[in-house]
Image (cartoon, rainbow over all chains, first blue to last red; front, side, top):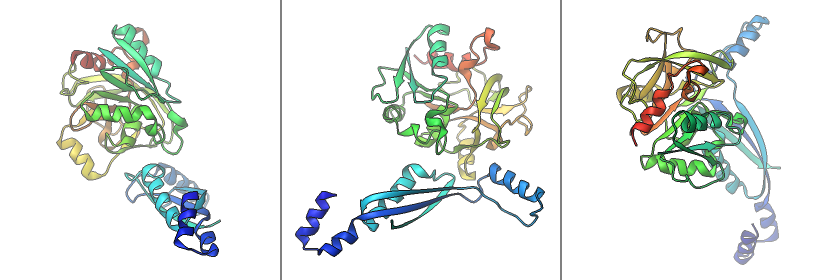
Amino acid sequence: MRKSRVQGLVKGDGLENLLRREVKMKVKIYITLKKGVLDPQGKTVQDALHSMGYKGTDKLRIGKYMEMELNDTSPEEAEKSVKEMCEKLLANPVIEDYRFEVEAA
Amino acid sequence: MKFGIVVLPGSNCDHDCYHVARHVFGKEAEFLWHKDRDLKGADCVILPGGFSYGDYLRPGAIGRFSPIIREVVDFAKKGGPVLGICNGFQVLTETGLLPGVLLRNRSLRFICDSVYLRVENNKTRFTGTYSKKDVVKMPIAHNDGNYFADEDTLKGLEDDDRIVFRYSNRYGEITKDSNPNGACLNIAGICNREGNVLGMMPHPERCCESILGGEDGKGVFLSIIDCF
């Protein structure tokens, strides 16, 4: 990150701009099952709700929620690397979709 | 010939595989630690059962990034025989060497049982000593053995004769009742297009000695040994 700071100075960015570019980002990731993938857990939980009297519940699907912080990064870099993380490890593209939100922490 | 048995943190069938290779079949065998980058001259690599990295995130998802797995993938792509048993099968799907994924059992319960399998393809390096349609009995022990893939992938597996074992009843009939975990098409084991990578949920290494209840798993090891 030190390198990009130097580059930023060389390019003549103002201090305000530098601060904006390198901040701690908070990331929220949602992993959901693709349509058509059987979800036995979701079905069992839905059946439990039915037996509790919540008759209107339907199509209950269980997914995963993850949150993390990313240090010293810009929003653009954060988006790029989180996308990579999702595709390589966090989600399995055979059965799961993902979406995420990046915001300043 | 020499077997290389991968040891990931949480593998727990590694010693069973080693015992079978070494003491039942009298072949060389060596453990391959997950941080190593050397297959130590193995002719066949076994990814054993267990719960690598505690099954965190998804079974096999983290183990797949171990340094040794990179070597195993290279070895497989060059045509080397790789056998993934149980968690090893899950790791192989995560690497993409085999298609699909192993989902949570339909019953949501861990299953520890002995089941019948029908040999669907005896032309692979792992099944050459069986006859097609042989019915064999092997133990299963898993929480996530419910094989899933999309329709096109399943059709491809069938068309290319890549389904190697299917759950059946004792008469070799593929029925819903004989499917322990909800796997698509009763799939218990599949191979890659080239036939040198096999992933299977049942444990052949646990049924190679009659004192342990059966010898039906011997065929898998004998078939590999016959290739060398």
